[in-house]
Image (cartoon, rainbow, N blue to C red; front, side, top):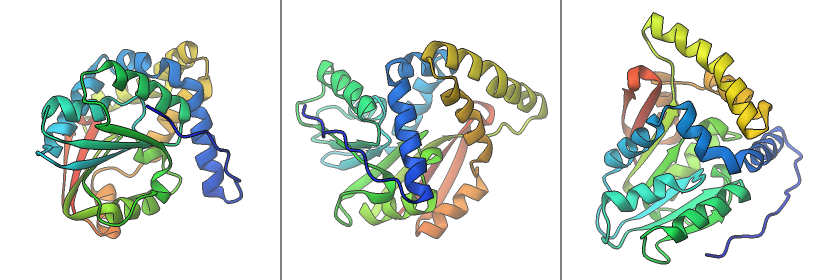
Length: 249
């Protein structure tokens, strides 16, 4: 699998600067990314992604876009859900290091050669024509869009009419005792452990800050509506630690 060559775009606007910072951050933690996901979520991230793919319900012959593909787990779960059904997935991510790890993981899998393609890119400027995908997935990536509104509009543009989008994001537990523990864990334990193992403490301070600033549930539903989506539903998982959103074009 051939990956695109890394490029360093000019970072003039605030959005471009944020995109560059996010790209460099994920490049720096890519090597330990899977380990930390499993460790810091106690393995629940595996179930959350599979719930996401179950909600997507891939069908024979469909074409999917996985934005912020990371190391490729969602794309591989799409094939595990519906193997041998002539499905194709294109994964995009701004981090070339993440894409390299995804390529290695895909090559070691039983997915048919050529069924998953990778490209370096961002949600705000998807290099695809209008209405070319049956479904789009984004797992823990919308928080990192330099412009969530622009990224969601791009997702809407490249979906076929009737196509579905499924987003998995961190949320905020509703129950007060759990909410208190969640905040303690996210703001103290996670940055300490994540920074120590990854070697980049700033990256794991960014995570709780970005989760705290992210619009959840009804607020995120409004962003999807503004982007043009309909039939929007959301459901919490694991007491509201994460939320799954689904929408239709």
